[in-house]
Image (cartoon, rainbow, N blue to C red):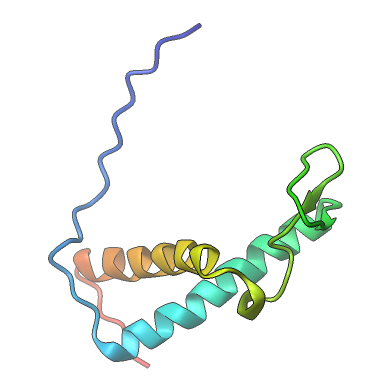
Length: 96
């Protein structure tokens, strides 16, 4: 087996605090992240199932965002928040 010496080095965004309006945007982004993921799964032949089964292509998270367990919503929120913080850390501004 090939040895993997990869060490992730993400941009440090710990000093970035999102204003409330961007936290609201992050929640909408999180919902969209889930919608994009679900659409891709469904397009690949996956369907809802009580348990994830890679052979049968079933997944319990193929439900509307609002019906996800909080732990799954948090995963999508972290993706959205991380993306917004990265944009700000790179010197961009976000305006409505």
